[in-house]
Amino acid sequence: MKKLFFLCVMGLALPKVVFSEEFSCKLTFIMGSVQIRKGTETWQKAILNCALLPGDEIRTGPGSEAELKDADKSVIKVKENTHFTVQRFDSEESVFKVWTGRIWMRMMRLKYGNMKASIHTPTAVAGLRGTEFATGVWLDGTSDFFVFEGALGIREVNQVEEILLDKGFKTRVFSGQSPAIPEGLTDEDLSEWQEGEKPEEKPEPKEEDKKRKELGWQAMYGATMIDNKLYYQLGILPELKFWRLGLGLDLSLYFDEDGNMRKGDWKVQNKVLYLRYGEKDKGFYTRIGALPEVTLGHGFIMSRYTNMLYYPSTKTIGVEVSWDRKKGGFNAVLPDVDEAKLYGGRVYGKFGPFNLGATCVSDTKPATTTTVYGGDIEIPLPFDVKLYGDVAKIDRYGMGFAAPGLLAKIFGLDFRLEYRNMDSDFIPAYFDTFYEDARMKKLGSLTSGGEKTKGVFSGFDYQFFNAFSMAMVYESYSKKDPTLYLGLGLLKKIGNLNSASISLYRKEAKPLFSDFKKPNTMWRLVADYQLAGPVSVVYTYKVNYDENGISYPSSSLSTKISF
Picture 1 (cartoon, rainbow, N blue to C red):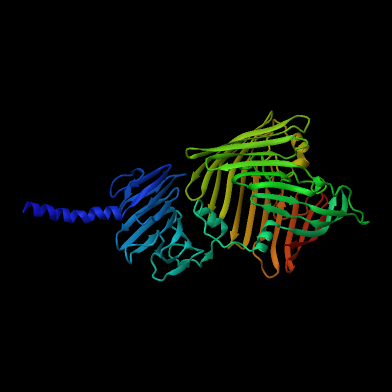
Picture 2 (picture 1 turned 120 degrees about the vertical axis):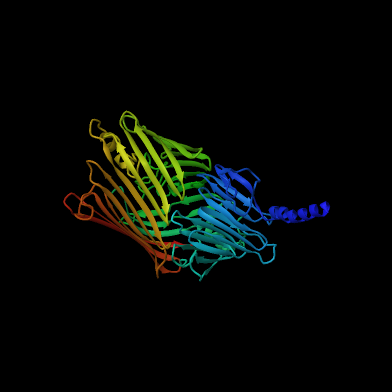
């Protein structure tokens, strides 16, 4: 009788043991701060290969990640700052919930018959159809869904009707609202969510498509000013691509009003625009020749510097090198190899939850060397938000602080806000776009003894439906009138109009939106209009004013042919 009772107890216990093995998720990867809570227990540090059963929770801290796998080899990647629960996991149904944060999931073929699977958020329910997908949940519960394989049936949590989200699409669900109309996934979406994943195999491109990709040719003609003399430009500006290499050429000829070709145009050094390897912020990158824009860190010392300010009348050979890794990297720039007067760099690394960096740029071209050096710190927060601070000093002169600073990506809006406190003999972004023209003026303006400058620097960049863009930069400091940049752009083709943009720049102007006829005001309009086939015409119009309010408009019209 005792033996019979023992066998009955074992028979009842055995299914539970099997259930625990087959219907559980194991932690197969841990990085950073990862905690689990089993049932009603308190939060504890996660241990590699521990199993999560129904009712168990997991949460990750800033800069942390975890990966779960089940017996089917399904994979769940739990990104940083995420709170995730395994609500149900048995032979009939699997239910997961994302409270906040982001997950990526791949559901392999389900071997338990008609087992159902779904993902829940505070605002939505998504039924899985053998899917590879991702979801992100904001602090207010708003949920984003991205489908890479299969499909999702998505509905608002309090509604019955659902939409079918197919492969290659995304949607957003607000509280109390039906899912938004699906939109196609962008390259940025794929890069963000599928980093490190095996890319989808694609058919080999046709030979003519390869040639077009490798030869990004453009042909153009128009008018330009060189050394205060009008020339007519005729030529092609190709970039030859092979593997990770790129060679930019300037095969242009310049003719004066009498039809005479500008001397020296066919020197080899004048025909090579740049040579590059790799891409910025993606591993190792270097570029030799023309440097259109260089920014170090947050740009508190060097922001959008270029050695092309006097191009095409002056062509300067510079070098930019960067190496970006997950744990750190460096940037270095030498804008003019011949003179080697200006040089700088930045090193940065990840130390625990902090990102730390150090920058130094020096210019020995003036009578006395000008060196600016400083450091910066970033603290990652949930949902693509970062707190940061910068400090910099101009050697022998003053210091400046940019803290606190805030970087955020909110519903497609790239936002930046920082408070600045600077000595009277300190200039933020000392090495900027116009530095080559203003270096002596800047050096002469560094006089100590004045009051500190305090104020706000802010800006944002927003894209509407991947079709329109809007950008703004606003600076307002004590003892100075505010500075404003506004830009509007068309990103998608409408009819024959390929793209268009209009911008307004006002430096230290008050009021900002009236009395525009001042030297500190500049308007710019660019439109690219398709004529026929690969031929389009690009119109550029700029206008600024002198001290008497007289306008000085300039325009150019060039033809572009893309092969």
